[in-house]
Amino acid sequence: MTQITRCKMVCHGVTANEHQLGMHNVQLGAVWSPQTGTQLDENQLFGKLTPFAHFTACMVASAAGQFVVGREYYVDIQLANQEQLAGDQCADQLALLDSDEEGHAV
Image (cartoon, rainbow, N blue to C red):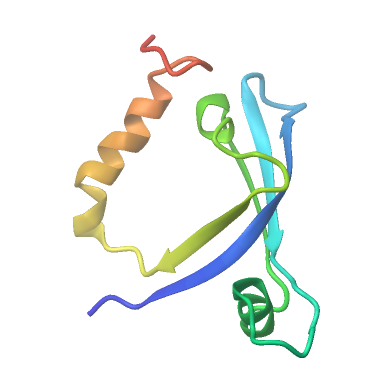
């Protein structure tokens, strides 16, 4: 069975990459919620289990455009498997490389 670790993160920034034309940097950080003494909310639970996390990626504009500052996202981490790389996920990533900033084929 494949083990997946899930983090809940908030988008802190989406900015144009100053070194690579057409690329954007996306910054995510762990969610946090103060201890209120009431029943745990989801952000408080994730914040307790993963009190610190930081993820930064440089990606094509069409992928970066899916992120909105202030919105929360789940990040799933699992062991890479060479058999999985040959499947649909790889084809989806290659399609992004063959599109412009608006997602149109080039």
